Length: 328
Image 1 (cartoon, helix red, strand yellow):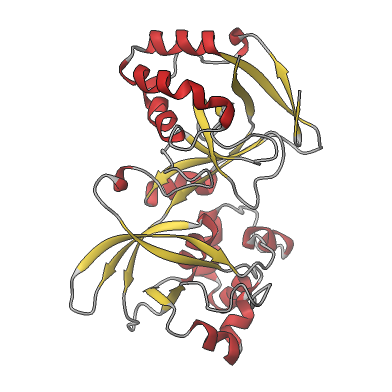
Image 2 (cartoon, one colour):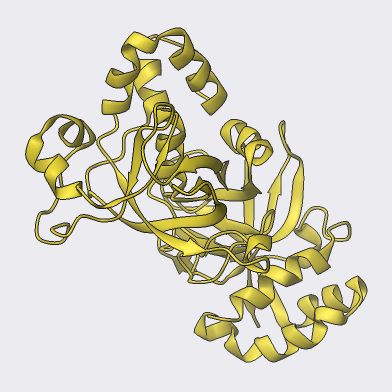
């Protein structure tokens, strides 16, 4: 069965590695979230999925084997199967600029839809008309331009904002659009320059600390800029990630971003990756996408939020195998 850029080959459940060792109840939380906006083929199963949320792991696995058919996903185009990671940054910010925090995060400019593509990152920093289009659109200010870049690459994050009166609140900033310029990896740019061999995010930050005079040049190598909207963050919402492209909140360790032409949103997927950073055999759900996630066997693994998640996401790059689980 062909699905976009991939071929789905039916297999026996016994082919799925680590099937008996996964903590399925953790995946079930993400499944219930997917059932808020299920793909049409899975909608009829959602009542049973909800009832099984209190089932034993054996009952959950038995139901999956009975109701779903696994398909090994094979790419139709060249390219190595690859698992990478992403996360939700947690950053300190100020509502107004200060001596320490001067890097703005913006809401979309009023003329974003009228001018496509909008100004590049370099033009935003240097052209008066671009800066005028963003005046009054500031949400908050960060101290580190690399933190702002990471937030734009990840597409959302949490801000611990200090208000002018000294109050501190935690909010989420979510993707609200981009300037529609092409995305260019600053790590790839540094590799092309011969500036470093470790193009992980920690490696990029180390290079930037050692070469502050070239920081602006590196940032301008990526013309893509992301704009945000501010959202309140309740205690309940704080237990989940931002909403992915499927329209449901992401679950750490159980949500992946995929190429939607190969795997429809909401699809349960068995993911296997041997390491070296993380050894994974588990049930996950296709709930998001990303500009760099292209191909049949390609996934971005949602790690969670905060600096520890960022450390893992910045280094995660390892082999991958995927099986789509589809109703019989």
